[in-house]
Amino acid sequence: MKYLIGIIGIIVVLLMAWAFSKDKKKIKYRPVVIMIVLQFILAAVLLNTNVGNILVGGFAKGFEYLLSYAAEGINFVFGGLLNADAQSSFFLGVLMPIVFISALIGILHHFKILQIFMRSVGYLLSKVNGMGQLESYNAVASAILGQSEVFISVKNQLSLLNEKRLYTLCASAMSTVSMAIVGAYMTMLKPEYVVTAIVLNLFGGFIIASIINPYEVAPDEDILEVKKERKQSFFEVLGEYIMDGFKVAITVGAMLIGFIAIIALVNGIFSAILGISFQDLLGYVFAPFAFIMGIPWSEAISAGSVMATKLVSNEFVAMDFLTSGNFDFSGRTTAIVSVFLVSFANFSSIGIISGAIKGLNEEKGNMAAKFGLRLLYGATLVSFLTATIVGLIY
Image 1: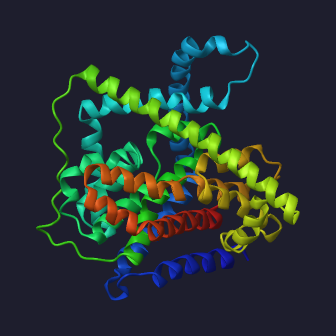
Image 2: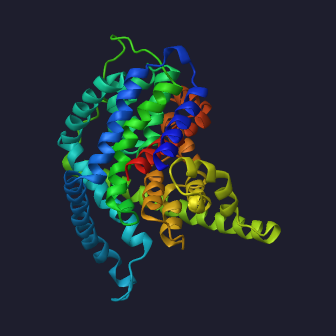
Image 3: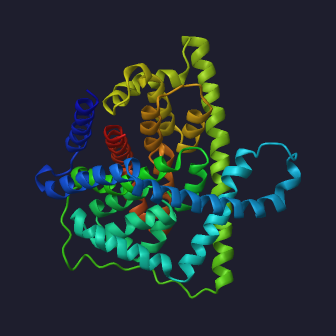
């Protein structure tokens, strides 16, 4: 029965994308089918094979080491704030390591290692997804640099992009996550769920964008031009990325304080007036979607509540809700919900992406804001598709 429901779920997601397609006649179905097959293969390898266990284990172990090194700097600065036996706070244990990870990204960027990797993988992706090299490069870069920083690397191309190509670039940025905060995710979710979601979302973003936003890229338009930056010294780059990481950590912390407090207030108001919390109400709205993703109906309402929390706030709030709540989910339900949460698909990302682009090109920033809701719709479908495939594989 789970296979039948899962297949229906995939069909529903694809139909929901097709219904909002800008040009149904231009949809390239062959790349879509190929990428869906690749998603199934990659999900099966990462979740159900020894090779996958080794890859995920190595990835997780690497981040475990990085987090331990980050703790050295954190303890030096903040160690006196905690008792010896006290559990590390969310700010110190989850957010502050972002500073160190960001610094490492800066080092790899300075020595051109990241650029070579992103261009190489982007080139290979372009041979599969039927899109341009710029779109493929941007998708890989988004998963490493982040949804706002990635647009700096394609600044010179922004003025040359039409609305359809800009939409695809923004969709990739919203469907992925930044490598700087992957370590933070792994402190809240199992590493195998985080890694699987990152890999599947990379292809899922192209699948949904290919259906919602189909177009052709002429060979003379498909020129990958990365912004040529002023030559910076090693310590200039290092200092810049350290401060960028700190800004991200502080920003995420501020958003968590605001969103969690507001949700608590709204829950209190709804409970007092209707006798049901706002999150529980959202759970009923999202329950049918959770069910077609493969979650049993007995758990669908609670799972829907977690997923809806991510949409209206952000993934950190939803992850905290998942880990701290007394849901008693089955292993399969936990896997489905977890991979759904690993993306930037939420309302606040519309402002982050359009604001980042507007800072580089006002016209294109206004264009991105105009299709913001359609962008969020597509990125959310990417999360639904990834979670449904995991439900079938797990």
